[in-house]
Image 1 (cartoon, rainbow, N blue to C red):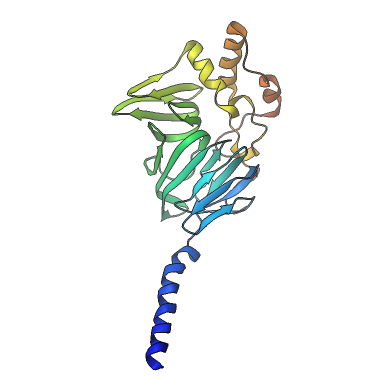
Image 2: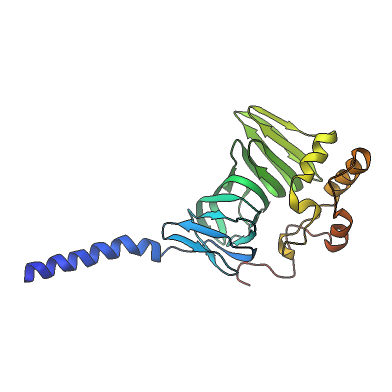
Length: 256
């Protein structure tokens, strides 16, 4: 009986060892706002995401027809748009609410990223075919057969297969497709802007996740007038979205 008891005790200890890492995982962010029925899959299985739900390292976030707006403990803000999938690969804290390493893999869809308190070299964003280096930035991007990025604040370095292009703020737009990386202009730039949903209409976003997109809206409006079509809602968004910076003073901090 004593032997059986020891075995049973060992089984309990083993079970505890297996389950404790999942139960003791430290949240690295939370859902600030959401729409639809998004979910996350992590070491503990799949779960629905609601306002206030914690986000963990290794989570795979899927939005379906909705979106999620995530604020991380270093004050980085991330929007995962409709029909999008993203994996939080790595998040290592260094103290002082700053990340030593913050790596995400945007598998497909549309996104908005606003950097937080962490150093610029801590961030690593991968898409389906490119990488995006951060330089203290707020930008929209998409991941699919090509990667598109539109920069509103700061700058990014867009790279694919060793080829890189620096894309600056005030609506610099870059594209990576195959081995080609380029900064867009003309009609291609207007088309790229229209494919990123939160540039022309920020109404679905909570205020801390909004940016001043007026430069990009002006470009989209110019090419709408010249070529026609595709930018409905621009005037409405201009009225609804006041200029903001990557920091807001009306709330949105991780602890609020």
